[in-house]
Length: 461
Ligand code: AMP
Ligand code: ZN
Figure 1: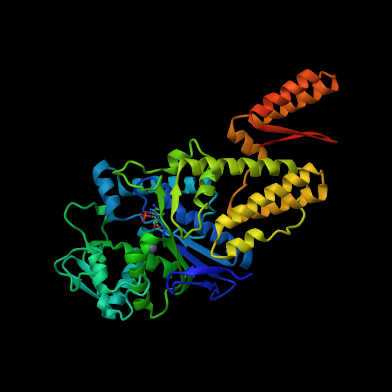
Figure 2: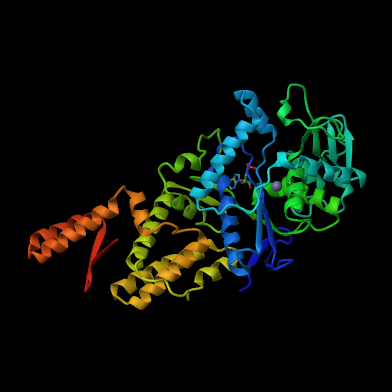
Protein backbone atom coordinates (compact mmCIF):
# COMPACT_ATOMS: atom_id res chain seq x y z
CA UNK A 1 0.00 0.00 0.00
CA UNK A 2 1.24 3.51 -0.81
CA UNK A 3 2.27 5.72 2.08
CA UNK A 4 0.98 9.27 1.65
CA UNK A 5 2.62 12.14 3.48
CA UNK A 6 1.95 15.86 3.56
CA UNK A 7 5.07 17.52 2.24
CA UNK A 8 5.63 21.01 3.65
CA UNK A 9 7.81 21.80 0.62
CA UNK A 10 5.00 21.31 -1.91
CA UNK A 11 2.16 21.88 0.60
CA UNK A 12 0.51 18.73 -0.76
CA UNK A 13 -0.27 15.23 0.40
CA UNK A 14 1.94 13.08 -1.84
CA UNK A 15 2.65 9.41 -2.38
CA UNK A 16 5.97 8.71 -0.73
CA UNK A 17 8.56 7.42 -3.21
CA UNK A 18 12.02 6.83 -1.73
CA UNK A 19 15.16 7.30 -3.81
CA UNK A 20 16.16 3.72 -3.04
CA UNK A 21 13.72 1.22 -1.54
CA UNK A 22 16.64 -0.65 -0.01
CA UNK A 23 17.90 2.43 1.81
CA UNK A 24 15.19 4.82 2.93
CA UNK A 25 16.69 7.77 4.82
CA UNK A 26 15.06 9.92 7.48
CA UNK A 27 16.38 12.65 9.75
CA UNK A 28 14.58 14.39 12.60
CA UNK A 29 16.06 17.36 14.46
CA UNK A 30 16.76 16.26 18.02
CA UNK A 31 16.82 18.13 21.30
CA UNK A 32 19.30 20.59 22.72
CA UNK A 33 20.48 18.75 25.81
CA UNK A 34 20.65 21.43 28.49
CA UNK A 35 17.63 20.39 30.60
CA UNK A 36 15.00 17.66 30.77
CA UNK A 37 12.93 17.59 27.58
CA UNK A 38 9.28 18.63 28.02
CA UNK A 39 6.29 16.76 26.72
CA UNK A 40 6.14 18.94 23.57
CA UNK A 41 9.72 17.97 22.74
CA UNK A 42 8.60 14.36 22.71
CA UNK A 43 5.90 14.85 20.12
CA UNK A 44 8.33 14.74 17.14
CA UNK A 45 10.25 11.65 18.34
CA UNK A 46 7.00 9.76 19.03
CA UNK A 47 5.36 10.77 15.74
CA UNK A 48 8.46 9.97 13.68
CA UNK A 49 8.92 6.73 15.59
CA UNK A 50 5.52 5.66 14.22
CA UNK A 51 6.67 6.66 10.73
CA UNK A 52 9.93 4.76 11.28
CA UNK A 53 7.91 1.67 12.25
CA UNK A 54 5.58 2.05 9.27
CA UNK A 55 8.49 2.47 6.84
CA UNK A 56 10.23 -0.59 8.25
CA UNK A 57 7.08 -2.66 7.97
CA UNK A 58 6.82 -1.68 4.32
CA UNK A 59 10.44 -1.64 3.14
CA UNK A 60 12.04 -4.05 5.61
CA UNK A 61 13.66 -3.76 9.00
CA UNK A 62 17.12 -3.11 7.54
CA UNK A 63 15.99 -0.92 4.65
CA UNK A 64 15.47 2.23 6.72
CA UNK A 65 18.23 4.44 8.08
CA UNK A 66 16.96 6.86 10.69
CA UNK A 67 19.13 9.54 12.28
CA UNK A 68 18.32 12.10 14.94
CA UNK A 69 20.89 14.30 16.64
CA UNK A 70 21.72 15.77 20.01
CA UNK A 71 22.62 19.44 19.90
CA UNK A 72 25.35 19.50 22.53
CA UNK A 73 26.87 22.94 21.97
CA UNK A 74 24.69 26.01 22.01
CA UNK A 75 24.13 29.34 23.78
CA UNK A 76 21.58 27.78 26.14
CA UNK A 77 24.04 25.09 27.23
CA UNK A 78 26.79 27.65 27.78
CA UNK A 79 24.39 29.64 29.93
CA UNK A 80 23.64 26.63 32.13
CA UNK A 81 27.37 25.86 32.39
CA UNK A 82 28.05 29.42 33.51
CA UNK A 83 25.20 29.35 36.02
CA UNK A 84 26.01 25.98 37.58
CA UNK A 85 29.79 25.94 37.15
CA UNK A 86 29.48 22.43 35.73
CA UNK A 87 31.47 21.39 32.65
CA UNK A 88 29.43 21.43 29.44
CA UNK A 89 30.14 17.76 28.86
CA UNK A 90 28.69 16.85 32.28
CA UNK A 91 25.50 18.77 31.49
CA UNK A 92 25.02 17.32 28.01
CA UNK A 93 25.82 13.78 29.16
CA UNK A 94 23.34 13.99 32.00
CA UNK A 95 20.48 15.23 29.83
CA UNK A 96 21.26 12.99 26.83
CA UNK A 97 21.11 10.00 29.14
CA UNK A 98 17.82 11.15 30.66
CA UNK A 99 16.40 11.77 27.18
CA UNK A 100 17.22 8.24 26.06
CA UNK A 101 15.73 6.80 29.26
CA UNK A 102 12.53 8.81 28.83
CA UNK A 103 12.25 7.92 25.14
CA UNK A 104 12.65 4.27 26.03
CA UNK A 105 9.80 4.61 28.54
CA UNK A 106 7.73 6.08 25.69
CA UNK A 107 8.53 3.00 23.55
CA UNK A 108 10.54 5.09 21.09
CA UNK A 109 12.96 2.88 19.16
CA UNK A 110 16.35 4.52 19.20
CA UNK A 111 17.39 5.90 15.80
CA UNK A 112 20.11 4.05 13.88
CA UNK A 113 22.36 7.09 14.30
CA UNK A 114 22.45 9.64 17.08
CA UNK A 115 25.13 12.11 15.92
CA UNK A 116 26.26 14.86 18.28
CA UNK A 117 27.29 18.29 17.08
CA UNK A 118 30.61 18.34 18.95
CA UNK A 119 31.72 15.14 17.20
CA UNK A 120 31.17 16.74 13.76
CA UNK A 121 32.87 20.13 14.02
CA UNK A 122 35.39 19.31 11.27
CA UNK A 123 32.58 18.24 8.90
CA UNK A 124 30.85 21.55 9.59
CA UNK A 125 34.05 23.51 8.94
CA UNK A 126 34.53 21.66 5.65
CA UNK A 127 31.01 22.57 4.57
CA UNK A 128 31.43 26.21 5.58
CA UNK A 129 34.70 26.44 3.63
CA UNK A 130 32.82 25.21 0.60
CA UNK A 131 30.12 27.83 1.10
CA UNK A 132 32.72 30.57 1.47
CA UNK A 133 34.60 29.38 -1.63
CA UNK A 134 31.37 29.40 -3.62
CA UNK A 135 30.65 32.93 -2.34
CA UNK A 136 27.50 32.01 -0.41
CA UNK A 137 29.20 33.03 2.81
CA UNK A 138 31.23 36.02 3.97
CA UNK A 139 33.26 36.73 7.06
CA UNK A 140 33.16 39.57 9.56
CA UNK A 141 34.93 40.10 12.89
CA UNK A 142 32.13 38.20 14.59
CA UNK A 143 32.28 35.13 12.38
CA UNK A 144 31.08 33.63 9.12
CA UNK A 145 27.66 34.48 7.70
CA UNK A 146 25.42 32.94 5.10
CA UNK A 147 24.24 35.56 2.65
CA UNK A 148 20.61 34.69 1.92
CA UNK A 149 20.38 36.85 -1.22
CA UNK A 150 23.08 34.73 -2.83
CA UNK A 151 20.61 31.85 -3.07
CA UNK A 152 17.92 32.19 -5.72
CA UNK A 153 15.22 30.14 -4.05
CA UNK A 154 15.91 31.00 -0.42
CA UNK A 155 12.59 30.84 1.47
CA UNK A 156 11.00 28.08 -0.61
CA UNK A 157 10.15 25.88 2.36
CA UNK A 158 8.40 28.46 4.51
CA UNK A 159 7.16 30.47 1.53
CA UNK A 160 8.23 33.71 3.13
CA UNK A 161 9.82 36.60 1.35
CA UNK A 162 12.81 38.34 2.86
CA UNK A 163 10.81 41.22 4.32
CA UNK A 164 8.48 38.86 6.20
CA UNK A 165 11.45 37.03 7.60
CA UNK A 166 13.06 40.10 9.04
CA UNK A 167 9.72 41.31 10.37
CA UNK A 168 9.54 37.97 12.22
CA UNK A 169 12.45 39.40 14.25
CA UNK A 170 13.98 35.98 14.96
CA UNK A 171 17.07 36.96 13.02
CA UNK A 172 20.39 37.61 14.68
CA UNK A 173 21.35 41.23 15.11
CA UNK A 174 24.85 42.14 14.04
CA UNK A 175 26.12 45.48 12.73
CA UNK A 176 28.38 43.89 10.19
CA UNK A 177 25.78 41.75 8.48
CA UNK A 178 25.17 42.57 4.83
CA UNK A 179 21.51 41.75 5.10
CA UNK A 180 19.36 41.52 8.22
CA UNK A 181 18.20 38.00 7.19
CA UNK A 182 21.76 36.63 6.91
CA UNK A 183 22.46 33.99 9.52
CA UNK A 184 25.53 32.81 11.42
CA UNK A 185 27.50 29.81 10.23
CA UNK A 186 30.37 30.38 12.64
CA UNK A 187 30.36 32.51 15.79
CA UNK A 188 33.67 33.89 17.05
CA UNK A 189 33.99 33.26 20.81
CA UNK A 190 33.32 36.20 23.09
CA UNK A 191 35.58 36.84 26.10
CA UNK A 192 34.70 34.64 29.08
CA UNK A 193 33.09 31.83 27.09
CA UNK A 194 34.10 28.35 28.24
CA UNK A 195 37.06 26.71 26.48
CA UNK A 196 34.93 23.60 26.06
CA UNK A 197 32.73 25.47 23.59
CA UNK A 198 35.61 26.85 21.53
CA UNK A 199 37.24 25.32 18.44
CA UNK A 200 39.85 26.58 15.97
CA UNK A 201 38.60 27.51 12.53
CA UNK A 202 39.63 29.57 9.51
CA UNK A 203 37.33 32.33 10.86
CA UNK A 204 38.84 32.49 14.31
CA UNK A 205 38.32 30.52 17.50
CA UNK A 206 34.64 29.97 18.18
CA UNK A 207 31.72 27.61 17.61
CA UNK A 208 29.30 26.65 14.85
CA UNK A 209 25.83 28.12 14.45
CA UNK A 210 22.89 25.80 15.14
CA UNK A 211 21.71 25.36 11.54
CA UNK A 212 25.03 24.16 10.11
CA UNK A 213 25.11 21.34 12.67
CA UNK A 214 22.17 19.52 11.12
CA UNK A 215 23.29 20.18 7.53
CA UNK A 216 26.76 18.74 8.17
CA UNK A 217 25.58 15.77 10.23
CA UNK A 218 22.93 14.84 7.68
CA UNK A 219 25.31 14.77 4.74
CA UNK A 220 27.91 12.91 6.79
CA UNK A 221 25.60 10.29 8.27
CA UNK A 222 22.86 9.87 5.65
CA UNK A 223 23.97 11.52 2.41
CA UNK A 224 23.55 14.71 0.38
CA UNK A 225 19.91 14.04 -0.49
CA UNK A 226 17.70 12.31 2.05
CA UNK A 227 14.14 11.09 1.69
CA UNK A 228 12.43 12.53 4.76
CA UNK A 229 13.34 15.41 7.04
CA UNK A 230 11.15 16.04 10.06
CA UNK A 231 10.73 18.29 13.07
CA UNK A 232 8.31 20.58 14.87
CA UNK A 233 6.52 23.30 12.93
CA UNK A 234 8.50 25.97 14.81
CA UNK A 235 11.64 24.70 13.08
CA UNK A 236 10.32 25.25 9.56
CA UNK A 237 11.61 28.82 9.70
CA UNK A 238 14.36 29.73 10.13
CA UNK A 239 16.04 26.43 11.06
CA UNK A 240 14.95 24.20 8.20
CA UNK A 241 14.99 26.99 5.66
CA UNK A 242 18.61 27.60 6.62
CA UNK A 243 19.48 23.91 6.57
CA UNK A 244 18.22 23.82 2.98
CA UNK A 245 20.21 26.94 2.07
CA UNK A 246 23.47 25.56 3.45
CA UNK A 247 23.14 22.03 2.12
CA UNK A 248 21.82 22.88 -1.33
CA UNK A 249 24.33 25.67 -1.91
CA UNK A 250 27.24 23.52 -0.70
CA UNK A 251 26.27 20.35 -2.59
CA UNK A 252 24.22 21.65 -5.52
CA UNK A 253 21.61 18.95 -4.79
CA UNK A 254 18.17 18.79 -3.21
CA UNK A 255 18.56 18.33 0.53
CA UNK A 256 15.39 16.38 1.34
CA UNK A 257 12.51 15.25 -0.85
CA UNK A 258 9.81 15.24 1.85
CA UNK A 259 9.64 17.75 4.69
CA UNK A 260 7.28 16.84 7.53
CA UNK A 261 6.30 19.11 10.39
CA UNK A 262 4.35 18.27 13.49
CA UNK A 263 1.96 20.73 15.09
CA UNK A 264 2.45 22.15 18.54
CA UNK A 265 1.28 20.81 21.85
CA UNK A 266 -0.52 23.11 24.28
CA UNK A 267 -1.35 22.49 27.93
CA UNK A 268 -5.03 22.91 28.87
CA UNK A 269 -5.43 25.28 25.87
CA UNK A 270 -2.46 27.41 26.87
CA UNK A 271 0.98 27.67 25.35
CA UNK A 272 3.46 25.73 27.44
CA UNK A 273 5.90 28.17 28.97
CA UNK A 274 8.06 28.73 31.99
CA UNK A 275 6.35 32.03 32.71
CA UNK A 276 2.91 30.39 32.94
CA UNK A 277 4.50 27.59 34.96
CA UNK A 278 2.78 24.82 33.01
CA UNK A 279 5.81 23.03 31.57
CA UNK A 280 5.25 19.26 31.74
CA UNK A 281 8.35 17.10 31.94
CA UNK A 282 8.04 13.37 31.16
CA UNK A 283 11.06 12.70 33.36
CA UNK A 284 8.78 13.67 36.30
CA UNK A 285 5.46 12.55 34.82
CA UNK A 286 6.75 9.01 34.31
CA UNK A 287 6.93 8.57 38.06
CA UNK A 288 3.12 8.54 38.12
CA UNK A 289 2.05 7.78 34.58
CA UNK A 290 2.91 4.78 32.44
CA UNK A 291 4.94 5.68 29.35
CA UNK A 292 2.31 4.13 27.09
CA UNK A 293 -0.34 6.48 28.47
CA UNK A 294 1.84 9.48 27.55
CA UNK A 295 2.63 7.96 24.17
CA UNK A 296 -1.02 7.26 23.38
CA UNK A 297 -1.91 10.84 24.34
CA UNK A 298 0.84 12.14 22.02
CA UNK A 299 -0.66 10.08 19.18
CA UNK A 300 -4.27 11.02 19.91
CA UNK A 301 -4.23 13.85 17.36
CA UNK A 302 -2.98 13.58 13.79
CA UNK A 303 0.60 14.85 13.84
CA UNK A 304 0.02 18.04 11.84
CA UNK A 305 -2.82 19.16 14.09
CA UNK A 306 -2.37 21.03 17.33
CA UNK A 307 -2.63 18.79 20.38
CA UNK A 308 -4.26 20.00 23.57
CA UNK A 309 -2.75 18.16 26.52
CA UNK A 310 -5.29 17.85 29.34
CA UNK A 311 -5.85 15.70 32.40
CA UNK A 312 -9.06 14.43 30.77
CA UNK A 313 -7.03 13.26 27.78
CA UNK A 314 -4.64 11.36 30.05
CA UNK A 315 -7.52 9.73 31.96
CA UNK A 316 -9.11 8.71 28.70
CA UNK A 317 -5.85 7.25 27.38
CA UNK A 318 -5.36 5.29 30.58
CA UNK A 319 -8.89 3.88 30.27
CA UNK A 320 -8.31 3.01 26.59
CA UNK A 321 -5.16 1.08 27.45
CA UNK A 322 -6.82 -0.68 30.40
CA UNK A 323 -9.53 -1.81 28.05
CA UNK A 324 -7.09 -2.91 25.32
CA UNK A 325 -4.91 -4.82 27.78
CA UNK A 326 -8.03 -6.30 29.37
CA UNK A 327 -9.12 -7.62 25.98
CA UNK A 328 -5.61 -8.83 25.19
CA UNK A 329 -5.53 -10.66 28.50
CA UNK A 330 -8.59 -12.69 27.53
CA UNK A 331 -6.97 -13.93 24.31
CA UNK A 332 -3.42 -14.03 25.62
CA UNK A 333 -3.06 -17.79 25.92
CA UNK A 334 -3.69 -18.45 22.25
CA UNK A 335 -0.98 -18.71 19.65
CA UNK A 336 -1.19 -15.64 17.49
CA UNK A 337 -1.35 -17.08 14.01
CA UNK A 338 -1.60 -14.72 11.12
CA UNK A 339 -2.50 -11.12 10.68
CA UNK A 340 -5.59 -10.25 8.73
CA UNK A 341 -6.46 -6.80 9.86
CA UNK A 342 -4.84 -4.05 7.84
CA UNK A 343 -7.09 -1.28 9.15
CA UNK A 344 -4.29 0.23 11.19
CA UNK A 345 -1.96 0.14 8.19
CA UNK A 346 -4.52 1.87 5.99
CA UNK A 347 -4.94 4.60 8.59
CA UNK A 348 -1.22 5.17 9.07
CA UNK A 349 -0.51 5.15 5.34
CA UNK A 350 -2.86 8.13 5.07
CA UNK A 351 -0.46 10.78 6.37
CA UNK A 352 -0.08 8.97 9.71
CA UNK A 353 -3.74 9.19 10.68
CA UNK A 354 -3.13 8.04 14.25
CA UNK A 355 -6.63 8.92 15.56
CA UNK A 356 -8.06 6.56 12.94
CA UNK A 357 -5.43 3.92 13.75
CA UNK A 358 -6.29 4.15 17.45
CA UNK A 359 -9.99 3.75 16.66
CA UNK A 360 -9.04 0.58 14.77
CA UNK A 361 -7.08 -0.67 17.76
CA UNK A 362 -10.16 -0.16 19.96
CA UNK A 363 -12.26 -2.00 17.42
CA UNK A 364 -9.81 -4.92 17.58
CA UNK A 365 -10.09 -4.94 21.37
CA UNK A 366 -13.86 -5.26 20.89
CA UNK A 367 -13.31 -8.18 18.51
CA UNK A 368 -11.14 -9.89 21.10
CA UNK A 369 -13.82 -9.51 23.76
CA UNK A 370 -16.50 -10.84 21.43
CA UNK A 371 -14.34 -13.81 20.47
CA UNK A 372 -13.68 -14.53 24.16
CA UNK A 373 -17.39 -14.18 25.05
CA UNK A 374 -18.22 -16.73 22.37
CA UNK A 375 -15.24 -18.86 23.39
CA UNK A 376 -14.33 -18.95 19.69
CA UNK A 377 -10.73 -20.09 19.87
CA UNK A 378 -9.87 -19.45 16.27
CA UNK A 379 -11.21 -15.90 16.51
CA UNK A 380 -9.35 -15.40 19.77
CA UNK A 381 -6.03 -16.39 18.19
CA UNK A 382 -6.80 -14.11 15.28
CA UNK A 383 -7.70 -11.21 17.55
CA UNK A 384 -4.49 -11.61 19.51
CA UNK A 385 -2.41 -11.53 16.32
CA UNK A 386 -4.24 -8.47 15.02
CA UNK A 387 -3.97 -6.53 18.26
CA UNK A 388 -0.28 -7.24 18.67
CA UNK A 389 0.45 -6.33 15.06
CA UNK A 390 -1.38 -3.00 15.43
CA UNK A 391 0.32 -2.41 18.78
CA UNK A 392 3.76 -2.94 17.25
CA UNK A 393 3.10 -0.39 14.52
CA UNK A 394 1.89 2.18 17.02
CA UNK A 395 4.46 1.30 19.67
CA UNK A 396 1.69 0.45 22.15
CA UNK A 397 0.74 -2.71 24.07
CA UNK A 398 4.41 -3.58 24.43
CA UNK A 399 3.91 -5.07 27.91
CA UNK A 400 2.13 -8.28 28.74
CA UNK A 401 -1.40 -7.82 30.13
CA UNK A 402 -0.08 -9.11 33.42
CA UNK A 403 2.75 -6.57 33.55
CA UNK A 404 0.29 -3.84 32.66
CA UNK A 405 -2.11 -4.76 35.45
CA UNK A 406 0.74 -5.02 37.91
CA UNK A 407 2.37 -1.78 36.90
CA UNK A 408 -1.09 -0.39 37.26
CA UNK A 409 -1.87 -0.87 40.95
CA UNK A 410 0.82 -3.04 42.42
CA UNK A 411 -0.28 -6.66 42.43
CA UNK A 412 -3.81 -5.85 41.37
CA UNK A 413 -4.12 -8.57 38.74
CA UNK A 414 -2.91 -11.23 41.14
CA UNK A 415 -5.35 -9.98 43.80
CA UNK A 416 -8.25 -10.10 41.34
CA UNK A 417 -7.20 -13.56 40.14
CA UNK A 418 -7.27 -14.72 43.75
CA UNK A 419 -10.77 -13.28 44.29
CA UNK A 420 -12.05 -14.88 41.09
CA UNK A 421 -10.66 -18.21 42.28
CA UNK A 422 -12.18 -17.72 45.76
CA UNK A 423 -15.56 -17.19 44.09
CA UNK A 424 -15.14 -20.41 42.08
CA UNK A 425 -14.25 -22.25 45.30
CA UNK A 426 -17.31 -20.80 47.04
CA UNK A 427 -19.51 -21.94 44.17
CA UNK A 428 -17.97 -25.40 44.23
CA UNK A 429 -18.86 -25.51 47.95
CA UNK A 430 -22.40 -24.28 47.02
CA UNK A 431 -21.79 -21.19 49.15
CA UNK A 432 -23.81 -18.98 46.79
CA UNK A 433 -23.97 -16.01 49.17
CA UNK A 434 -20.17 -15.80 49.36
CA UNK A 435 -19.82 -16.25 45.59
CA UNK A 436 -22.26 -13.40 44.96
CA UNK A 437 -20.57 -11.21 47.54
CA UNK A 438 -17.22 -11.58 45.75
CA UNK A 439 -18.82 -10.89 42.39
CA UNK A 440 -20.44 -7.72 43.77
CA UNK A 441 -17.21 -6.60 45.40
CA UNK A 442 -15.38 -6.85 42.07
CA UNK A 443 -18.27 -5.26 40.19
CA UNK A 444 -18.00 -2.26 42.51
CA UNK A 445 -14.42 -1.85 41.26
CA UNK A 446 -15.60 -2.02 37.67
CA UNK A 447 -14.45 -5.60 37.17
CA UNK A 448 -16.72 -8.01 35.39
CA UNK A 449 -16.43 -11.77 35.84
CA UNK A 450 -17.23 -13.96 32.88
CA UNK A 451 -18.04 -17.61 33.45
CA UNK A 452 -17.44 -20.09 30.70
CA UNK A 453 -17.05 -23.81 30.34
CA UNK A 454 -13.37 -23.79 31.26
CA UNK A 455 -13.74 -21.63 34.40
CA UNK A 456 -13.92 -17.86 34.89
CA UNK A 457 -12.09 -14.88 33.41
CA UNK A 458 -12.42 -11.21 34.19
CA UNK A 459 -12.12 -7.86 32.53
CA UNK A 460 -12.34 -4.23 33.41
CA UNK A 461 -15.63 -2.81 32.24
P1 AMP B 1 14.32 22.20 20.94
O1 AMP B 1 15.10 21.40 21.94
O2 AMP B 1 13.71 23.44 21.49
O3 AMP B 1 15.12 22.47 19.67
O4 AMP B 1 13.06 21.31 20.49
C1 AMP B 1 13.19 19.97 20.10
C2 AMP B 1 12.00 19.58 19.26
O5 AMP B 1 10.77 19.75 19.99
C3 AMP B 1 11.80 20.42 17.99
O6 AMP B 1 11.49 19.55 16.91
C4 AMP B 1 10.64 21.32 18.32
O7 AMP B 1 9.92 21.67 17.17
C5 AMP B 1 9.81 20.43 19.21
N1 AMP B 1 8.91 21.18 20.11
C6 AMP B 1 9.25 22.11 21.02
N2 AMP B 1 8.16 22.55 21.69
C7 AMP B 1 7.09 21.87 21.21
C8 AMP B 1 5.68 21.86 21.50
N3 AMP B 1 5.15 22.63 22.46
N4 AMP B 1 4.89 21.04 20.78
C9 AMP B 1 5.41 20.23 19.83
N5 AMP B 1 6.71 20.18 19.50
C10 AMP B 1 7.57 21.00 20.18
ZN1 ZN C 1 17.93 20.51 12.43
